[in-house]
Image (tube, rainbow, N blue to C red; front, side):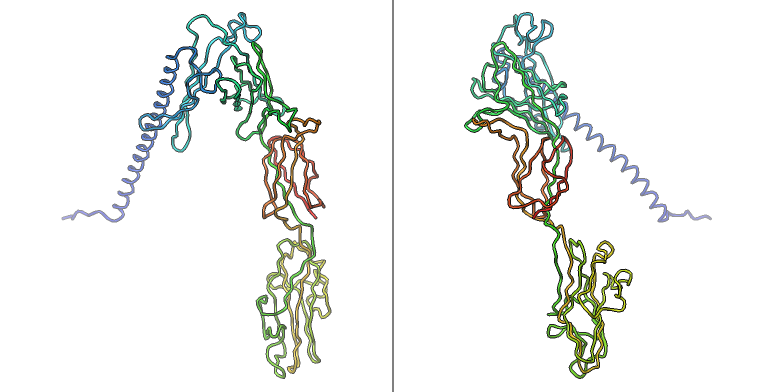
Length: 485
């Protein structure tokens, strides 16, 4: 009779793996389904919020369809918040007059009325998976009867880049505190880089600021005691006239300033107050401020050796020399050699006479390559008659170091673009950046395209990777390395 076999461990493992694969797939599908459902719910809510707000605006009297601080003016807030189904939404309302092309536009308008109807754009924004999303609804609202003039004029803002090409989506902020109601709102340039605002109240004090993420900023400037001739000044809107002004913005450039001190002579010395700078000592000792053979008078070791730790200057430019201060009583001698960071002696081809050792100093190290040998060790071999010992009181490795980062250097960059002149006709620069390099001697700056003069009070530029003034083009990266005295 055949006895039925039970499940082996392999059967159990395979079965569990198959079940796990199936459930993981189902879990992935469930998660994707929940995300799609949540996304659809949030988007549907945003659509409902925007649509409801549009219907509210359409229910208002035509003359009341406008925003606080906007053109046209009205009681509707430019920005508001609301919550629907537990989801918070931000609501932005933008309303503007439209000059319909059917009866001509601008000066060619058949009836001279450029405020034919109003266009409303409501944007509902929400956060989904840590990302801002939006739903926009646009509607035209026409006057209940024949169109009529609202007075005022038309404001046209052109946004272009450094080459004169349009900058779509540029933010244009219009402010005027001298009209009633006060004007203060932000809109965005169309695909042609234009913002057109019919129905703007007549005034001489329209302040315009044009900006975009990652771009420079352009604006109008107020006339004051210093800037008596602003360029450009605040804009003027006249009755039934179009005021047009062009503002240039472009991608910011990066300028990295690096300041260094010149190459200078430096050295590392060991006066043997202890053995902390020694890596290897065989039958040798540090005693009384000297490196010598082990033992005591009349019983010194007959020979011995010592090797220093590696000397590796951070900003090594050139090796210079090795100087040794020592005493050699009768019957004693010592030789000094130079080794690399592993303790291997430099060959005679690199440093003539090195393998035999040196007894006269200083040793000329100027031919030793800093690239091949960025670190050196000093090695000494001693011999004695046992009665006395040679004693090295100090050794000094001299080298040139640099350029070394020069920290906290104050400097000023002054752009060539002007924002006006004083009453005496003295130009006033648009951009003046006064700052310092960091503790590492570096400062990165985001600048608009321009030509910048450099001033570094208290220092003289010895050499520079690029000589100021700096011509900075849009979207470029420039590095200026300065050696300062």
